[in-house]
Length: 197
Image 1 (cartoon, rainbow, N blue to C red):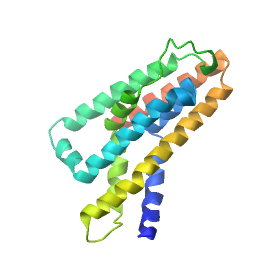
Image 2: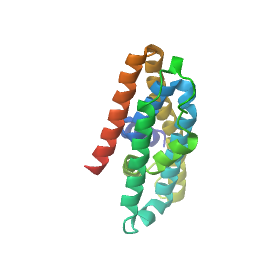
Image 3: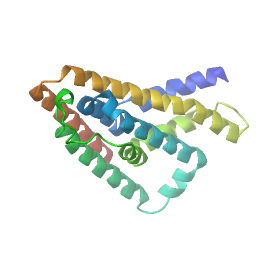
Image 4: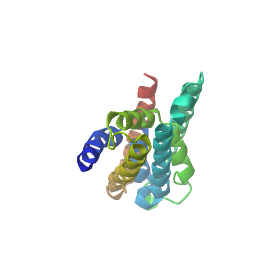
């Protein structure tokens, strides 16, 4: 079983850790609001992604997406929130000089983004279906996969937040901060465009 878990993590890491709406928004929140400012948002994304994992494991995702138009509504809701987040990041002041007039993204915002993130469903669905850790016991297999992947979700999101906040330490000059914030916002908008492409 240890070998199968290692293979599960090796399959999951590139899919879950690659740039996408959640990971880029984590980095952007870290760059715009610092590690502490982005922590609640990162925890929200991690909780939402873990919820997506549970929905996939229990088959709820398949049932919801079978409803005509549900996938489109979920995708549009996620895209609208990402665009709103891109605006907030673009208008955020440098971390060192922030006056609190632009609030950091919330836990609820991160959770909603993760729930509406099509990449999360695709990546986690692929990971979940690609490996069997415990043959001949579907429920135990699902439980082991969830227990193995939830810490990876938290680790991946933490790394992206820390990487983004590393930029914040360097970008205390207003013009450099603005360039970084706008760049992250453009990447977020591009990730939305890729979903619709």
